[in-house]
Length: 260
Image (tube, rainbow, N blue to C red):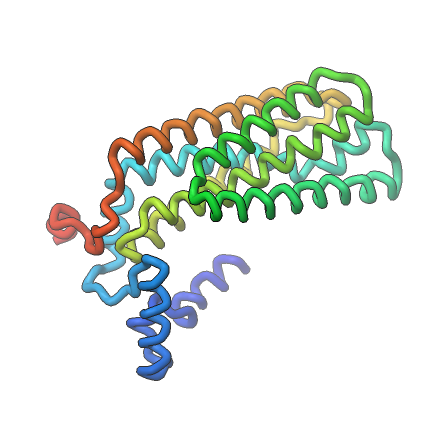
């Protein structure tokens, strides 16, 4: 069904305001101006989808962001096992489902605060590192202590840190590879698609045979969050040292020639 709707969306969803035929000239101009005010391209460029794809995969930033997002997404498989972890903390029946609610509420509050803060200070990598550190420390405590209340409390903060890192990483990608819009769209789709593959094999790190401590699952998740810290540091260092040209509003000639 997902694949079917994806195919339909190709013919339904517009690419960019500048190429959207069902908008009036006034609406098209308004949409273009709004994007330009945000520092984004309107898409009025002679750049093919293939050229955008080649340009995106030739950019080392795409691959580093792919690694970072894969760490976040694979660690996020803990989502599927939150009810199972509640049962491991001696909750039974309907209480298992009820006790997942505070965990998601804590995550919601932290994600909102982190999102507004990262936007206000315009600093995604430091917020990613902070959330990954919080998650790593919290999950270490969950994996090593026996007190159910302590494990429950720190599980909430550990999960919240994981759920913060993924959207922040994609937002950081969008801000970094900002032009041209076609390349940015391909980079985001490429990173998100391949990172989501980690959800398949990530679901096998929580075997029921390791209950109630789930040492393998927590160990792998802790390592993944440590990987988030490292990749955020690398992204911060290399994007500062080799800044993406904000004036770059076209695919390079080398990418054009490689597609001819």
